[in-house]
Amino acid sequence: MVQKGSSKGKVIQITRSSKIDFQRGLLLQSWLWEIEGEPKFEKKSAMKLYMPNRIAELLVDTGFESLRFLGDANSSPYQIDSLRLIVIAERPE
Image (tube, rainbow, N blue to C red; front, side):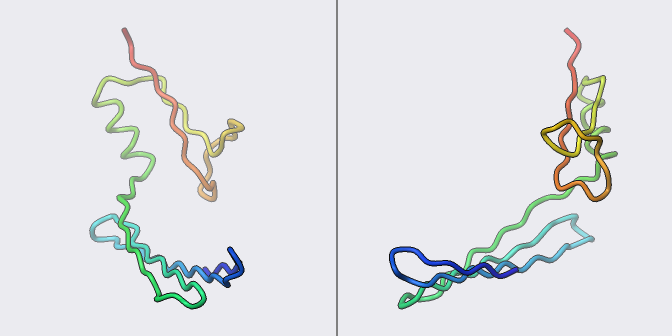
């Protein structure tokens, strides 16, 4: 993904590349900032990925119940193409 724009009169290009490491369950990302007249800057990140069933298992194992899986802040049901996974769970008193 490439985004271009400008700030303070300088052209900025941000390039993001993503790769999934299925063995370790990680989303690996690299962000490259190119700002006109300045050295390139790269930032790398790794984010652990959890499938909904694993999140449910972890929550139940720690005492949560009444799990609801949503796909967005409008309470739409979670689907495979949802951009987000929001989990609402209750912990009994």
